[in-house]
Length: 614
Image 1 (cartoon, rainbow, N blue to C red):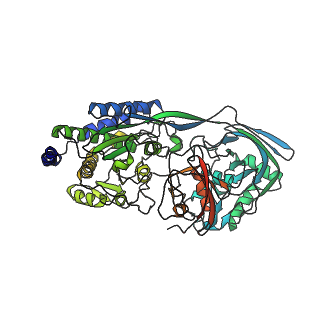
Image 2 (tube, rainbow, N blue to C red):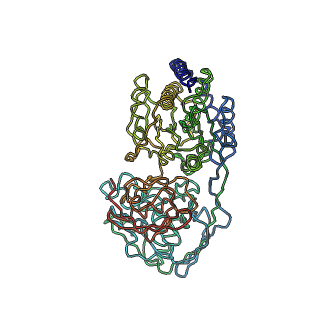
Image 3 (tube, rainbow, N blue to C red):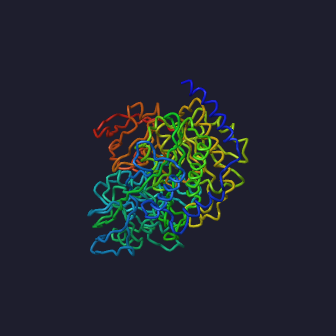
């Protein structure tokens, strides 16, 4: 003990001199990492691809070269986990329909196509027209009102009513979440339908050429739990005429007065076999550890995957098949982790000492598919999360405009904002704290759900986001180095401060700088009453696992806990987050809902009284 007390002042003195020295971050070396990770050779680093594994090896080699060790208790730098990475059309897709005396056998990719989130299986049932397939109590609109669709196949129109009318109760300037295809699937399933057939709203797009939705480009769950296909509008129109109706006239009438006009399609029988094959691959988080004097530690992380050749998350869907390099998203954050790992390793080698707290450097796979890697690690940590002082996340730090940086999560730790305010004036950076929450769509969310304070560094969206144009030559490495120096200073303070920040729950806000395009919020959607759960983004095979339950929320009052898996909400079976979103939106504040969850694989049923969303 006496020896230790003499050592600490000497250590801190030498360390302060090292940290006070001019930054040793190298903009050229930072850019070299990005050039490799965003190179044509790595083909966009899609999760599950051989190229992502090349990136994992590159990161591992860098960590090893810096003298960092694998996390305590792990067998190596790479943490494996399984993900459903892609969907492909199988060979057995068939669609037959009888309308009156006529029978048709439709041709795949010409007359019909399944969606990538469609369930597989054989369905045979009569057809029911369910308008736009929307239940929107907040707009006093319900295509399913008084309509029995149990065991039937529903035919629904794309998008939403009055989409071109700025005065619509729906947002006439932009589609609401009800217009999304996955919402229509979840709503149909919640009403008991056996399948969904989508037709284009041709009456709203009279000058456009009708095309089938390209398979693999549509956002949604891995499996919506219901067969979901698109059929050409002119073919569906024949079914309506067999029933003495005209689809385009009905569509125009709904848009005229915003009144649903749903009805059974008498005499229309559908027989389909949907064959969607899903690939399950093993991918890896890559982590390295710099041990400290104590068992507490700071996490600094970034995701290293991207979109590969585009697909459903591309913002340039017509360019699917072209490499989406992901130089800023998120080769920049990954390069930042490699530079920070090298920097801290070198600093403590020079000081010939250990930091007070350890530093865990992490790169995650599967972020673009739904925070899968960080979610897996948060549920299977290689170091106890109770010892994690904070998690710092770097996602898109390579294209700061006018040295402006967004920092999220500053309110999640009792000392985080004060730490930042003390350090930022020493920098050229302009900081925007506009998102003070922890729910932005990136990997820190997985840690805040486990009550770890978080900070999210982000240089802003740009026109190349999720497009082939996100290339290395557009990276501003000089401003990125400024960001890295700030991150290093913040991490150093968190590492050496006597007291660790206490976790603080903050009110979640929609983050205008987030890359989230899913439309699904962390609490079950932006509409409807408050429930109070935070989902685990690495979802179980069926249901919605709670990563956390907010204190004082309806779910918490009912006794629900983190780790519970929601499988039934009222009379609705819940297979994924999309099901939960639609089931919740159909309720009102004050409703009492019987909810069933699995807790340690045993069903538990409670009554939850919903409250007003604030």
